[in-house]
Length: 621
Image (cartoon, rainbow, N blue to C red; front, side, top):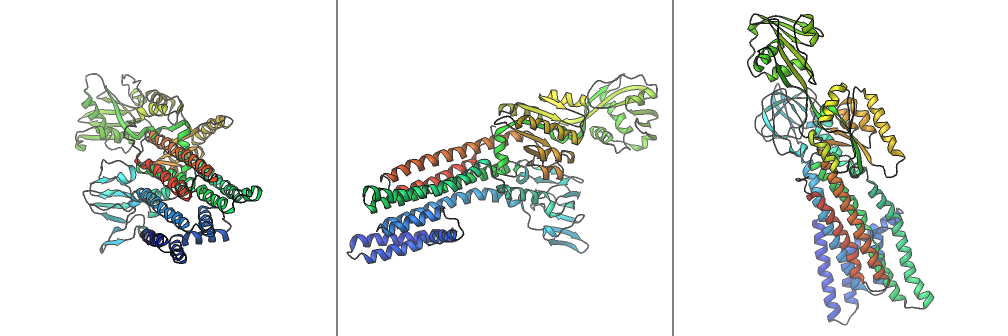
């Protein structure tokens, strides 16, 4: 960048000297030598690239057109004009490069999550080492202010983590012993001892960096169209320029110099670099904007597909729900209070490691004194029995109540039910269910606003629970009790319905588990939950939501549509200006100076327009 700037300044100074000499002295050769020197300073790389590409068989690019046009201007005696064109072309390219670098910096800032080192805890103390040398099971120390270098489990300490680089969320997240930490987060307060669970190459930070860096390898349809268009467009305009140069003098006897000059202007105007550069730039900026908001898109083609999203199919557990059991209802009976019922259940379940037992104990805020317990017995398939404060307590399913002759009232609530009895008297029922994520309640409405016509749920859970959740979330349909292969079959059928439909919309599947990987790979857009999702799901997906919020889909759609609008603006604007200036150049109205604007100016304006994507405001969407 600095070299290019210095070259432009030097070339401009020599060009100005040539201009002054051309006006003040009679000798033509000295200004010619000065202009030639300026041309070499400013244009030698363009000519060299054109020759290099010519040898490789890549003839028709902007370097070839600029070299041909300016050398042709030299040949017909328009020396100042030839150098001026190259000077302003280089100035335009410089500012264009600045615009591109600014956009790339946004991606680079995001990629700054790569850790530089890891503090390994050894018998001899703390050893600083490269993250890729750390093994699974090693203990690492993460001090306040340091990046977490590898994924792991906290075995000592507590802290607040800055997860914004991964999730786009500014609110710090607390972490304690047994909590999972992800590489790329920044430890803000306490010192942590972390047991490594993944190698660096498999860690979250490595996966994110690879996803974003490789996103450009999968082009959107618009990008592919422009590549094909440029291959046809450029040779056509070269042929037209040749016809413009030779036909009028040969057929009508017009002046050769005038028509060759017009043909050279025509060539400069025809450069397709504005289209070839600005459109991929638009999708690159779109992918970067999504990544900054915790949405990792693996290619421009997937980003473009969001604008045509018609059907969204959600998995349930871990996607629309948190995937964590929680007490959702306490139904106390026969004079027992809610807290008393919860106390009985928590004490009865205190020796069990079952997720249901854990959720009951987590809900109880009191202290469990195991000295008050005796005669604990776990009855497989039914529940538990224990003596608490001298009274027999039962906690389990309805069969446990019936087998022990307890006169109980069956609950009709959805979820897993724990019936509790104390001293032979029914105390009530505790309902435990998978908690629905807060943003899941609005995701259907927001997706409908953005043109999604069908929102479905596929789950392996039982139909009763699935239907209740689907009703709460206002979904259009639900398929429950499914095995992984049955999920694949249903998504396949939904896709087949669209195959014979012209301009059919896209189908997205959103899931998080290992069993979702086949469906994620099959859908038009496979969306995985990044924070809680399995490695297999993230690997198979086309898009990863780092915050595990299904509502992020609406942001992906907004970014996709805005990116598409910017890209279309660039195409229409560029082609309109090109066509207008090509006509002006052919009739001799546009000079080389207008030609430079039509080429470099339009390129720069298109790139600057693409950069608006990075400033796109999602706050009110």
